[in-house]
Every structure is written in structure tokens, then in C-alpha cells.
Image (cartoon, rainbow, N blue to C red; front, side, top):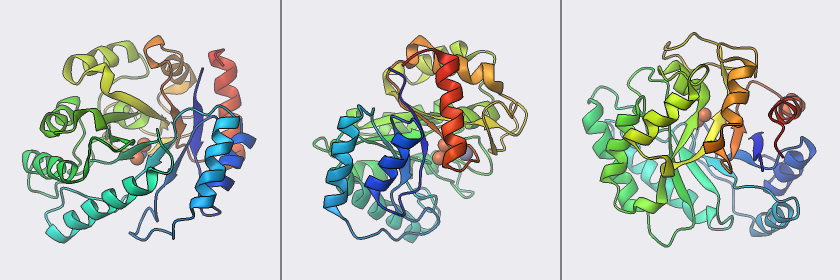
Amino acid sequence: MLYLGAHLSVSKGMYAAGRQAVDIGANTFAFFTRNPRGAGAKALDTEDYARLRELLQEHRFGPLVAHAPYTMNPCSANPQLRELATTMLAEDLERLELLPGTFYNFHPGSHTGQGAEAGIAFIAEMLNRVLKPEQSTVVLLETMAGKGSEIGRSFEELRAIIDRVEVKDRIGVCFDSCHLFDGGYDVAKDFDGVLREFDRVVGLDKLRAMHINDSMNPFGSHKDRHARIGEGSIGLEGIVGILSHPVMKGIPFVLETPNEPEGYGEEIALLRGQCGIG
Ligand code: FE
Ligand code: FE
Ligand code: ZN
């Protein structure tokens, strides 16, 4: 089964986003848990979540992939922002108990000049304060392009965070094809080699979800500008190679390309046709 979907707006509710996912041929989707550029979250509507759960079951969806707000920076030099990140993570995970089996990915953060090692320690500190073995959500570190002082630019940095996390089975990794490519991992020409390197440094069992984006910039540019599928430096063939790689079987793929829902629908149809699976 190829679990393929897109990042959708939940401004009209969770069930409405699920309906839209079905309409565009998706069988997974991603969503922001709260205002991506702020901190506020809407009041919890448990009935809305219940209707979504039913819909997901009926249409045999794979795991959904919730995305933390961009404002979450657990390794900021500002202790108030670190505290805010911890609070947001705890609240989001509590909510996601209403959607068991959903993944939750976040950008590890920007160390804002303190150095990667200090940043890594702060990120692990937040995770150790919040992660509990009884939570049903697995929290995923997203691979980053390495712009500015971003943590997560290399598999070694992700490994260093995971090594410090106590509840090991609640932590994993979310690949982002654009970020990996921009960060110097050639997912276009050698996805197999990238997977082997990830397995060597982190372990393939930690790879749980993937964002699928083409890149507007050349290999190793450390830029992070997403392009539509086939319109960037990775190219359609490279993307299809990722989606159909045997190691990726069962992994939910989420498009974060610059598109409206109809555009996502076209990309999903194109990729399903090209991959010839499910
Ligand atoms: Fe992201
Ligand atoms: Fe992403
Ligand atoms: Zn990005």
C-alpha cells in the first residue's frame, strides 16, 4: 500500500480536512496542530476528531503526520521560548491521543548562536520532560536543510538527540526530500546510498514518515525552498525512486509542495500512476 497525501488546512475542522484528503485521492495527510506562525490552538472538538477517526478507518488511511508550529524552538537561547516549546509539545501530544497512531513531526530548532551541542542538549531536555511511554504518538525529528543555525542538518545531529532521549520507542525521524537534498544527501541520484547512511548512523527502524517535495535549489545549497513535483532539481524520476523504494513500504508520504488542494490531487494521481503501487 502506498500511503500518499498532502499537507492540508484544518481551519474548517479535522473531519473536513479528512474529506478533502479523500477527494484528492490521498490516504494520509499532514496538518498543523495550531497556528503555524503563532502559539494559539483552537478549542478541542472531540466530536470532530471522532468523525475523522471513522472516516480514516472507512477509507483505510495510513498514519497521519501532524506538524508542530514553526514557532516551536526548543533550543532557543531564550528560556521563555524553550518553555513555550515544551508546553506546546505537551498540549499537542495530549490532543493527539484522540488520533492514536498519528505521528507528530517538529523542526528540531535553531540554536541561535549557542552552538549545535548546546542546542542538541536543550532539544533532548524538552523531549525527556514530555515523552511518556504510555503516549500513543511517536514524535519525529524532521531532517533539515541546514540554513542558519538549524539543528538536524545531518544524521549525526539527529542521532545525538535520539541518544539522549530516554523513551526511545516514542522518538523517530521524518525525512524531507527537499531538506535532505539541499542538506547534501543525494536523494535524487542515490536514495539507496542515503538510506544506507541513515541506517549506519541512526538506524532504519527510526524512519517513520517522509515529506515529499522537489527542490527549487541545487544539490547541497542549504536553502529549503520547496518546488512542485518534477519542477525542481530532484525531478520526477528521483521522487518516484523514493516512493517506490522497497525499504519505504508502509511509510506515509506527505506532499508539502506549493499547491492548492487540486494541485495536490494532480500530483498524487501522477505519482500513483508512476509508482504502480496501491
Ligand atoms: Fe517541516
Ligand atoms: Fe517538511
Ligand atoms: Zn521545508
